[in-house]
Length: 123
Image (cartoon, rainbow, N blue to C red; front, side, top):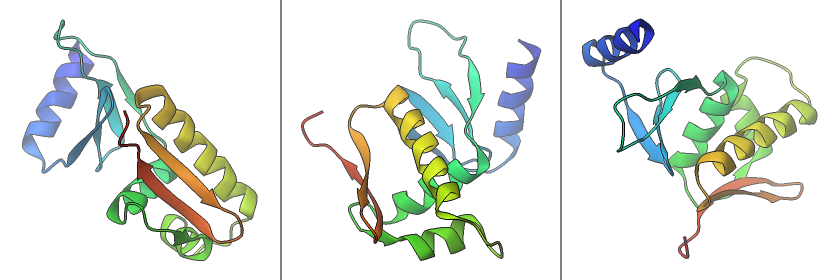
């Protein structure tokens, strides 16, 4: 409970940007997220990885637009040399997070080109 109160007071004193994805509220600043539970005031906090958060934020800026792998790598890993497997693992982890909280958002792979974020209209 003390940790939760500290997080809440921290959020109240900083300019936090939040988005809601499915059943969770995610801080775009810290990567902290918690389940939106209307039956209880107590929610469990978790943290999205730094690279996954950067990738999600970047993809959200241009929904339904294919973003090239090179541009993603330059944005998510600035001034670093990374392999395709690093990008693949980060995308996999982000997809896993999104699947656990929302069934209406997908990250689509365009082979050899890049990725795009879509929201299903049916869900």
